Amino acid sequence: MVTLRESKISAHHNYLVNDLLTPSFLVGDPNARNAFYFLAHIVLPGENTPRISARLMDEKGDLLLELDLNRLGENPGKCTYHPLQGGFRIVHSSEEPLLELLTQNFPRGHLTRIKARLFDENGDLRMEPLGESIQVHGEATLVLDTPFTPSGR
Image (cartoon, rainbow, N blue to C red; front, side):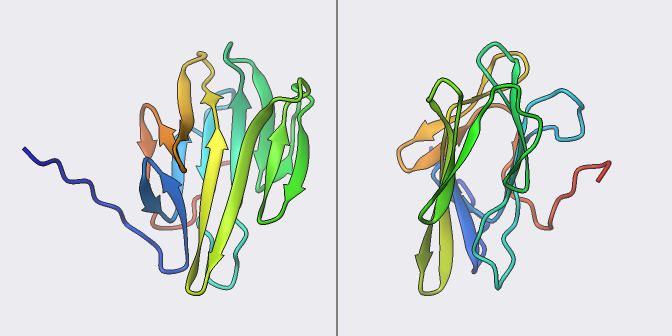
């Protein structure tokens, strides 16, 4: 039996998730005060910089860092932001890379690849590298048709 997977792609910018292209995705719940989430926002035409909002936890479920549109917020893990050609890297105080985004530009669009091994508030693995892609575990919204703004903003 053949299992079909459908990918809804943008003509402008996509992320590579579960070996499929998607214009935006959400893992976790950004509206839950102390819970893990990872939101890769839609990149609108005329822009080429992906924006990430997230609440990142360690393997024990303790908060490491909050990101709001690529800006560091609450940061008990003492993580640092390092700009890269075509993206950025977030490094934990232990010098271990926590998150890396790299965007490749093509004549007709952009593709962002994410490298991360991320855990939720229970210490469960939610995202990990899969070749050139990121593998998402558990419930997620792998296609957002419109820009998403968490409540309270």
